[in-house]
Image (cartoon, rainbow, N blue to C red; front, side, top):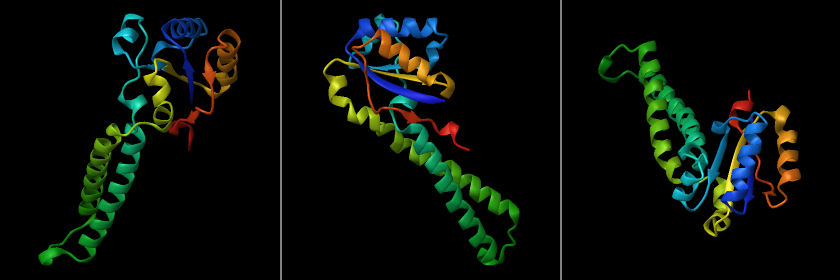
Length: 172
């Protein structure tokens, strides 16, 4: 999947784009809108971006789980190698400390990630504050060009720039 980012001047334009995307078989849950006025988006029945889309939550969770799990495994290796007070520790200690570290790292990083915006939102904060709307659409790689052409062809007012972000689920 790929997430496409673009700016539109207002609610009317965003509503038309959402309707055209629905006609092109893009589900509403794949379309997110960020705007200054929450109530205006709600009245227009536009799917507002949540924390997962408008913050650094998911990448922070991933980083925290990896770093915390690594630190937990290292602590487990040290505990097994140099057992405290003569205790005999085995694989359970490694697993337990690794899982604890991953969980704690994910939790701590999520607390920080929720408060940090995505690079795209930070870059476009002034435009959003002036009343424009940021639209994000999750599309498959096969449909990326089709959707870009649909928006560019029907909506010259939409500003599609360097706001594309590969989703982490594509890697691997």
